[in-house]
Length: 76
Image (cartoon, rainbow, N blue to C red; front, side):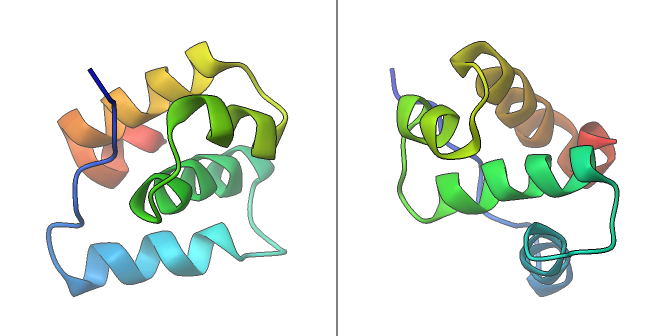
């Protein structure tokens, strides 16, 4: 089964994820989590996201599951 981030609930949520994924002056962890979501939205799968961001597949899966369950609140 392929794990993907669920679509943004509304334009505000999608905008926050997009802005945060490109942020230079935000907490590094928050930027990484937003990038995971954005890369998933762009069609990349977990192994590719992990390679792109230099983290483990387990980490990507954890944060995608949390986002799918709780939205942006789950990524904090």
